[in-house]
Every structure is written in structure tokens, then in C-alpha cells.
Image (cartoon, rainbow, N blue to C red; front, side, top):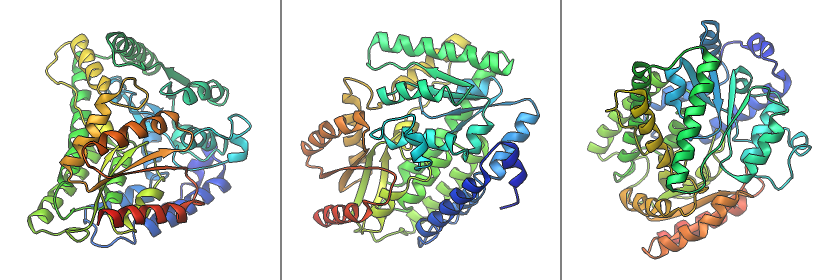
Length: 424
């Protein structure tokens, strides 16, 4: 990595804390990712992205800002990238995948708040997230009660916070609420950028984001092959980079990997033996550098063949209808697409139960591990209905609750190994 010290200093980062974070991240990446064998050659691009995730990519964003483009940071897949792109803004995911500045965070939030919410505060209070410090607008959303109340406090730390209201029920009223919020977001983004969204710019943005989702979904579908042509860790990394990278470059890089994987499948070449137990990972999103559970699974004798997660198929499954030719029809199509996202905040949420079972069958999973962050009530509550739905289809399930720390890694590995042995 080049020397970006002055850039980080200009952004107001705590250089000492940031260096410590990058050191931990780099060592974890080396131990977890670079130690894997038989990785696709195309993963070299994603290794480069991770080596420059706080360097070259941030410089690109700052160069865009210098040319008058606005940067919007978000924490959730419900924030429509299409609208941001159509108004000449770049949407990036914000840091929320590791513990940081915990003592400071707990001056604002209760200790028994989920790690993902605490992480978003920790990266701000610790001044170690250049994406957050680069953003002209930070978009929060009330997906759960924890986030809803947390944003009241985060607003005192982030002076450009915009909070989006989201429906909690799959109903006509819920869909109307989402439509109203997306039009409100459209107005806010146009005001931020000074650029009025046109039918042409919105159509182009829809095509760009559709291509990105189609590429990652192509990658997902190739994982149904036996033996698995790519590890779950590497596929997860591609899903994580989805939220950071330039859309066109990301799409091209993922499609190159898919071309390589198709050749691997043709040659019956897998990252693990054909009889390796296959796991579907279901539940909470996994932001960088939350790799603990996938690493434990894949070093315990199994391969992950799918992620039923916002950082995974839940976030990329559906495309926006491209047939509209007016802003109104295209906005309706955007609402239709995002309303299909089956986050655990919704009640009732039978669609998610169906999708977990469908994915297990599609990717030929031998078992499902349902992952919940501690104190994430929506996914913890829904883990039991998911388990019962899968039991009804004779699909073995393991429910796991954990956080970002490594203190429970030994205990988790014991449980995961026992589950994998049961599948074998």
C-alpha cells in the first residue's frame, strides 16, 4: 500500500488507532484468506481491493468529491443505490464489522446492544473509518428498535445523518410507506448533489446496479456445483466488496471469476473434496472484517455454499424491472424490488422461511447454520421458526449466537465440528 498518511490525517482519522486497526485487519486477512489453498486466480483482484480498502479506494472517492460528486454512506441494503447513482452520487457501505472503542461506545449505548450497532459507533468515536469521514451524507434506517434508538445518539456525532423509515409489515400500507420514503430520499439526494434525477439517469443507474447484482448472483449459482469451485470465505469476500467498489469494475471482476469457475466446474476441480459436507449460512449480515464463523466452519471440515444474508443472496436476489421509461414507473419498479427483501424485521415473514429452504435445496446443502449476533432480537426470534421450517423438510440446522470477539471461538468450533460430523 502507498503512503496515505496525509490523506488520513486530512480526514481527521486517529492515525495511531487507525494503524492498529489496519495491522489487525491485515494479519487476520493473511491468516484467514491467504492461507487458503486452490483459490481462483481471480481472487487476486479482491486481495488487492482489501489491501487498499482504506487507501486507493478512499483516494478514488476523494478524487470524485474534488470533481463535485457527492459520497453517500449507508448501513443497510434497503438504501437504494439506483437513486444515489442517478443523482451523480456514489453510495458506499460503512464500517460495522468489528469491535472498536467499546468503552467509549458504552457511554452512548447499553452493553447489551448488538455488535453491529455498537461497531458503527465505535468506528466513528475511534475515528478510524475513512468511508464515514468521507461521506457527505450518512443514511441510517430504522430496521430494528436498536438501530432506531441508536440513531438518535449517532445524530449528535454525525452532523450529516439522514434517517430512513422502513415498513415492518409486508402489506399494502407497508409498501406505500416504502414508496414515500424512497421519494423523500430522492428529494434529499437531489438537494445534496444539486442534480435533478432524469428518466435517462435513473434508467442507466438501474442497469448499472442490476449488472452488479446479476454478476454476484451468477457467482452464487455456480456454487451449487459439486465439488464447490470456490470457498465460502472467498465468495463472502466478493459479497462484502460489493458494498465498497466501483460498480462497473466490480461487475467486470466478478464475471471474470465466474468465467474461471465455469472452467473449474467443467474440469471437476473444487476447493475441497466432492464429499465435503456443504453448509448454507443463514441469518445476520457479515460486514468486513466479520469472518469468524465462516473461518471456523471451513477449517472444521465443511464448505459454505451459500449465504442467506443481506451480505449475500438476500441483498442481491432480485433485479429491478428495466422496462419502465418514466421516473414514476421506474421508481415503482425500485420499490417493488426492495420490498421483496425478506429481512427479519418483517412480520409475518414466511417468504424468508421459504427462501432458506429453497436455497438449501438449490445449493445442495447438507445442513444449515443459522447465525445471529447476540442481542439482535429480530434474527434471534426468527431463528426458531427457521429451524422448525427446515426440520419439516429434514434439513439439519444449528443455531448460533455470537459477537465479533474471539473469546468464544473454541466453543463455537467444538459445536460446529460436532454438527459437521453429524452431517457426515
